[in-house]
Length: 299
Ligand code: SF4
Ligand code: SF4
Ligand code: SF4
Image (cartoon, rainbow, N blue to C red; front, side, top):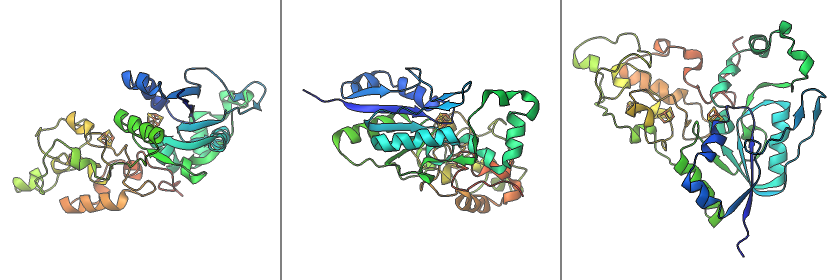
């Protein structure tokens, strides 16, 4: 008789899009369910660890072969849940960019904690009476507090990558992430010069992502958009550029803890831009990768 691998799915701080994307696997999920048994997944079987009325925290994570954790650590409850998953699961998968590198909300790491709290739960909001879990000083990724066996970056991770990783675990094979950059998957063409230099014009101010794209087939960076494709791991199929949107780097850099800044500064320099030309530059290089101290509060 086939013994099904037991799977725990838990969400920390994030948008839960990574869990929804698991439920959205469609037929692939039905195939996987012949080999796995999901024994704990709050998104489909409601369970709460923290009772905001009594302030009690009771974490119950069953023993399992695979623990899939998405979201990053923003509260002490998140930290305890993550540690409980690590303790009870043989293989831990960091599912999604929040778990791997902090995710989009780790942009908050550029602000001192007090101003984050004041912006979200002002002192006069009355939220105190609910004994909300204590927030951590900054947004933390999983591998800053525990060992991670498999990283699945992406916001959310590409479906094929998720399925491949689970199959590797089931078959006892090593899972490897793609090692190219998004530029390799991009449908646009790089000419290694800007459209402005074609016309003998100086660089204008950098364009915002929603400003209309003039040349459909040409690299967006070369048309004046800040595109992070050159510093971002491939695997998504260049999906944003197919919609004429520059890459924002949701797959993160090719090394999980790396700050993409160095590589992007190189790209800017090639085309004659400087750091000052980038809109929202405090966070622009690390939209999704603010953990690992890549983003720190302004002093
Ligand atoms: S990685 Fe993206 S989709 Fe997944 S939880 Fe974080 S914000 Fe949501
Ligand atoms: S910089 Fe962006 S638009 Fe240009 S080739 Fe790379 S991914 Fe495509
Ligand atoms: S193109 Fe960039 S932002 Fe878009 S999905 Fe791929 S990695 Fe993420």
